[in-house]
Image 1: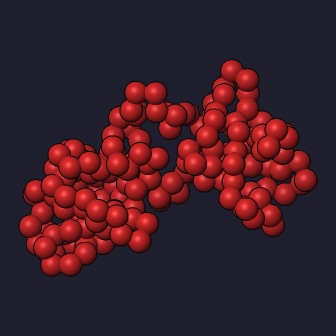
Image 2: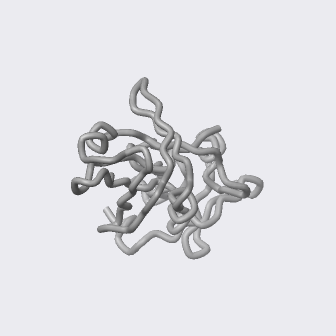
Length: 165
C-alpha cells in the first residue's frame, strides 16, 4: 500500500524549485535531502531526487536534481508523490477500519466516524456528532493523535472551533 505524501502546487522562481503541499505528518523525513520521490501525474511517472528543501508559508520549496529550470518545474504541476508507510506509521488504515470508530474528545464520546473523505491534500474524517450535526476532521497526527482499532475508538484534539457549526 502506498500513501500520498504530497503534491506539487506550482513552480517557484526561475531555478527549478517547486512548491509542494505535504500531506504527511513527517515532511522532514519524507522530503529530506537525498530522498527519492515517486511522483504520478496522470499517466506519467517521475522519479526525482531531492537536492534542497526549505519551508515557505506552510508549504515546502523543493529542488530536485533532475529539474533545472522553471519550464521543467512548471511541467510538474499537479504531480502527486507516493511512498510506502513508514515503520509504525499510523497513516496505514483502511477506510472500513476507521468507519464506525467512536470519537473521543477530552475523555467524552462525541460521536462516530461516518466516512473517510479523500481530499487532494489530506484525508478527512467525517464525524457524526452526538449533537446531531457532523464535522470534517483532518486526519493528521496533530489532530487525531491516537487510533485504537481494538478498542474501537480514536482520540481527537481539534483546534478551537473545528467542531462548532
